[in-house]
Image (cartoon, rainbow, N blue to C red; front, side, top):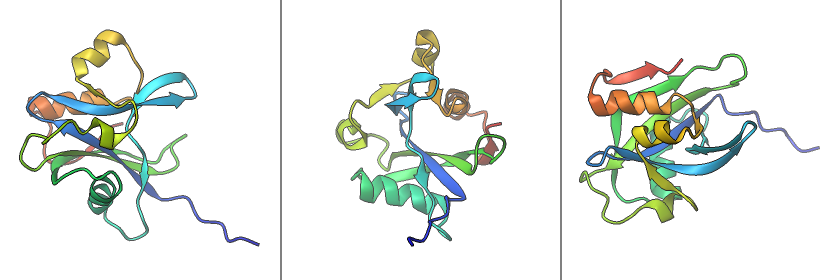
Length: 150
């Protein structure tokens, strides 16, 4: 009988950002409530810090070039329908500018968005609090460290 693998206690949601243009990459997603734009939910390995998970995924699995993790991290606690903690980690190019368009490395159909476009078009975003987190980051009113997104 195969051994069951327990669900991860936490996932990271890496958000690739372009600081100069105040935009971020989202991928098309199919949610229960219809079409949306999202970032992947990457399982955190047992004992692995969530920042290391972000780097592992972004560098090794997508092949993105040298990057820097922003000091602001959004946290969605495990409550209600969410079975695990989700960390929204912002990653930018180490030099501040991506050397080429990284959409093809990110995922098929990926698109750069800014928060105004998301609001103007009314598209669904997962996690739904991502635009607010991004506004706080761009405008500088979020402190460094973990910020609750509930």
